[in-house]
Length: 404
Image (cartoon, rainbow, N blue to C red; front, top):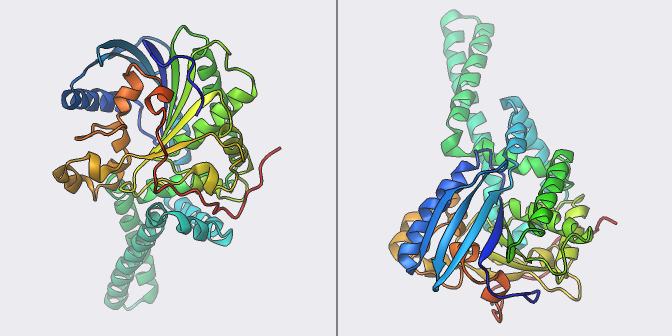
């Protein structure tokens, strides 16, 4: 971890990079508002939120924690428009995506390597494949039944085939209309987005990451004490690239604010293990040894959608000898949530994947709102903290090449 220039914070800029999410960023504002109030009531501090004027989407936070007044300006770095565009695929196109994505992960050997780490996120990746196949089989079965009845009633086999096709279409459309509960299409588009280029960043995402880098660079020239970048889920590997570029471009002022990076519920191996993820692997290798940034990675074994406690640099096979980060720690849901809360949430996989941004009944040393609006820098908060004893840091990726 990088040594902090100052351990105390009175003014902070926070950049939040969401995962693959097509929904308007206001959901994160409202989530922060609701959960911060709940955590403040549990932990005994004060926190408030107000709108922030400006071109970008965000909000201001005023907090009194451990007797210190802290101001935080939070901004969501938006790529939901890219996500929405990538999801505009019709039903046949989605099934074509299914075939291509499955082939990419299986034929490259990536799926098998991912299984060595954590089965939870791999099962989550296989879920949309299985669910979409089941939906197709149900549609075919319904079409066959209707077609057989029509053919029997008319005595004309061709009439059965003609009747079967619209039934199949209706069934598949019925399932898709309910994807807000089934998540099959959503997850399929998510995995397909990275697999379509076998791990290389699509041009539109490269351009957006460059914008993110510019936004962070501008904040580092503001009169603040800390600039904190938070990458959640797929947003973690986007943050890795944006920060690596920032440092490569010498845009971190020597006497500027402390630069910190918090990755939450990361799924980095889903991309970094792919054959053409050279750029991401190079960024992981580079960022992990830089003293300009403090990097803390928080996951939890209870989150079935994340590669819990997997050091994203080491498991990708690109850890340098002088690796400084990330510090891999656990949010330990079974310990930090009351038994009744855990019982209520344990099968709500998507909700658990967002728990890092929510209140904890018995918070340990991980409290998102104290990190975002508390008086200590990320480095100071975790100074002397040892990584989780269950950390996985064994190289597992078949592909370890890095872009020049």
